[in-house]
Length: 318
Image (cartoon, rainbow, N blue to C red; front, side, top):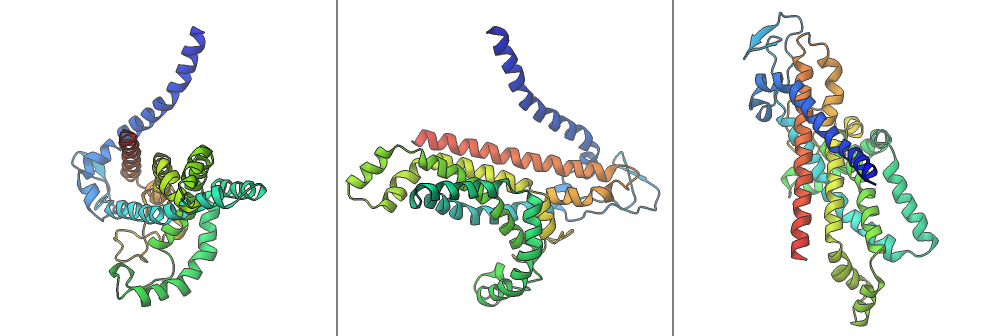
């Protein structure tokens, strides 16, 4: 028994140790870039590998190419804004889908519907990206975005044009929404189905309708589950790579001025720029990408810590 407990404990310790190893590696590898970039890394839109044909120079104790400069404010903005749009769209859609699957369907229909939702969660992200590229971008760029610009642009500043060709911030948010909705739906549906029948019967006995029971009794009781599922979905949206890379437009060194503008996210930018960064003979470009990865991991940790805090506060209030 003693050996079994220590063996299981050692296996369980591999997960936090692996995370710690990744953080240590990123810190060590990105440290020269952190010394070279300073705080300007976070507040400038100036990603420039420098002159590939020039002789390396020494700046702040680090060897870099001439005119090299690295700033990722546009990446931070693109990552956070696209994830925010995805969450704003996905949470109500996910909640309504979970309510429908748990209360609106019975028997085989519920089983089939639940299976389809879980199947959507298993679709590879590159498939969503290809669907967005082939179907969503032409449809939005030709029909939806011009209508939004004409109808909503005069009322809401962020919907003002130009509407663009379909690539951009809103398209990325929509694709991310479709990717994270199944996670929210499946998690909340399982929690609602597992709710004791006595709660429903108590509400009905007091004269409440089925929707009133759902809105006033069941959903408030699953607040912690919804918060947890939302934060997990946000974590996936923050780290999504290929799907966003295919529909975002890959803007460089510019902040989005409206909801249609092309953007870049940190994860997608690392994937798209790694080949170019490897051409830097000083290695500073790759180290700067490692700093981007470290920043993305920090944002993910903050998001998960916030989720834990919200769950803790929700538990105390309950």
